[in-house]
Amino acid sequence: MVTVHRITSIVASGHPATATTTQRKTALVRALFNDLCKVIAHPAVSNRPVDCPADFGESYMGTFYDGNRELATFTYGASGCQAVHLTVAGKSKVVLIMGATVTAAPKLEADMAAVLGVPKSKLTSPVQQVNPGGPMVSASASS
Image 1 (cartoon, rainbow, N blue to C red):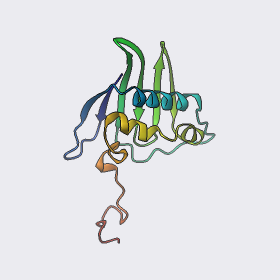
Image 2: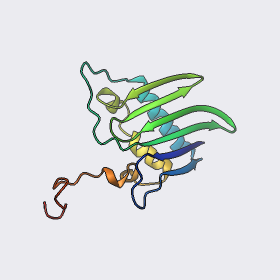
Image 3: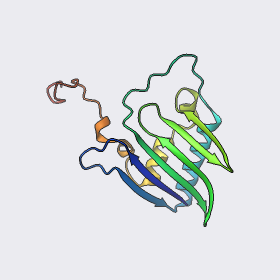
């Protein structure tokens, strides 16, 4: 079982700042846990500064359980520079999701969405959607 809390620092209209989901479907829980472990096992290394645009504070904090026993905790930063912080048996690691890390866990977003019971497009706030016309032009005018 996994319990996930959605935390949003910037609240968009009609998009709650927090929400909690508990998922008990073993296949979905295992898929998400495996994705998080793959991310941690394949950290990306950058030799230069990393630009993190559009960080709206969208994150998911969760705990994996075996019955009442806590197995692991995680935080998945879903906006800006995506990152995973995983703690298992008292040992923690934090990894930015870029480069080899993306390749190692290509289904992370889809599996997170499945655990939450939402489409993948709903993992981030509507405020993060890019307007192709730019900030001062309506999206319909740029088409």
